[in-house]
Length: 304
Image (cartoon, rainbow, N blue to C red; front, side, top):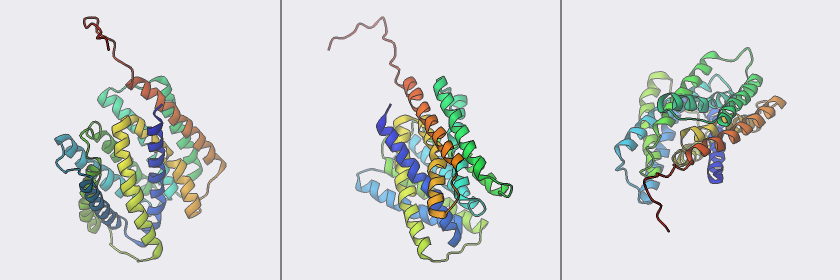
């Protein structure tokens, strides 16, 4: 098992999950799409500046440009935009739970489109992740949950699946931070057009808004996205996507601590099941990818 990848995945999941809580705070005092557009503009400019300082260039390969555009549209404008809008009607913990179904979507799409194989242990791990999420979700949804908010989150998950698969093999040319910065600027441009068309723009300047906005811009926005791109390049879409099963784990815990949203015994049981599912998928998928090719009988071995 690649322990560095595990550490990167856990760090990403913690940062990413915290964004649901900070976003919930932001939408109380600012219109969601406009605030997200401003956040991406700042994060994107910072990302490009850091990339240039590191000697990276925006002369990306054709595949990188294609992935950057798709990623900017699907993850930033659609997934994050729809999730932020949805949190006007649903709890941060519920949005985190719905987002955690993305690994199953990625695994299914990878199997159907790219013919990727997963060993039985990996399939069991995916099913365990879904079961854990369903268990947690059962404790969060009640009769009064807003269906429109859930619909926005579901569309967002499908968009995130497309974004994740778009980066498949497109990060091999390096320039990771430049890719992160540019895809944020693309998302920002789209949201600046969408915001005035779909919402009444308002900003109520408060200390909590400033702190939540600064945190979301730097930590989930810039740092987590950079780790995510590196992780996709390191272990591939399916194994990286399994860390999104931790969204309800960290998301519910952070929302409970920061916002007072309820955390019960079944939530903790679901966390344990999700964790076991991730551990099952990781070595199962890794054993397939690292299987050495059989030596050709026509090629004599060369002594070292």
